Length: 375
DNA sequence: ATGTGC
Image 1 (cartoon, protein in one colour):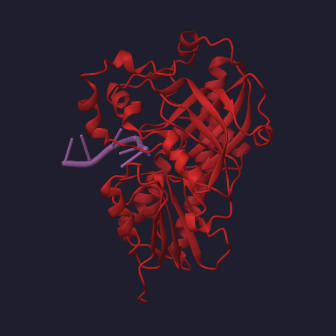
Image 2 (image 1 turned 30 degrees about the horizontal axis):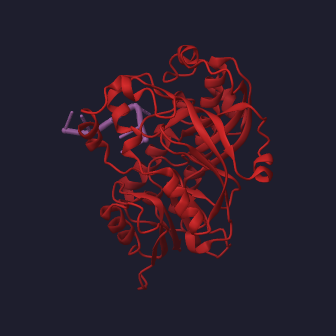
């Protein structure tokens, strides 16, 4: 195996943006992997399991499945609805949504076939949101900063939008586990058969995750009796050939939105605005990427202890911006409290200051579905 | 993150 210099390590964040030391160490460790060219942390960088979340990694000749992680294909999808912004009926809508956690009662195979997505062993989970930071959320347009860019999205004035954050559920997990069982955290020579096999499975999970977001949106809309129109769907966990076309170079994104796929949504927490931004697609030194959200500030295991003296569960299902949160898992309700996340305006501010994107609009959470399952 | 691990 060839020797090489350590990869470039860069963090896109102003000095006042909080970044946990452990996340920086994890980023630096990934930079020492064979074939690594660059490791770029976004302002939402935070520690993950071994490697950090909120980062892009460029490698040459090798692919590292653990840098993509278990939720292959995870991303954000936005739909416009025909629900008017004016008549918010939060409690009625919350009742109507019912339970979206169970298996969809429609024909999953037909739904996948319509989208030319291959069936898998995990199709019983298609249309389910999952746990962690995943959600489906009705949002109101808060402010339009760039009317020209906003107009390209085709969202009718005065309509609510639906943002879905979910991934490939057990499918991506199974693909990563199968890889780790054979190769641990070692990468794969990108020209070899093992890499081809991983990439084939990975690409399938990316397509399946996109179909999953579409079915989540459909279940949500069907429950409310509203119509949807697709606006965008952007994946933030994947490995792709490097956008500059450099041979044998691979771009891994782990919790990093692409700057190469047009306008993206960077969600805040339930209690803050989300940002619609227009990326500069040319920024190789930033790993052709943006932050994918606010990023955790506190570890999941620490949040409840910090907040249970301040908030009862009933306090957390209403947010500072007047939104309603459906989350019947009390542990998750605390783990996902807005205080557990960094300030989204600071995160987006860092991206804008670095010249990586401009703000198109802000969105205000109205009704967030997390889960109706109890842990 | 996970049809979730001992």
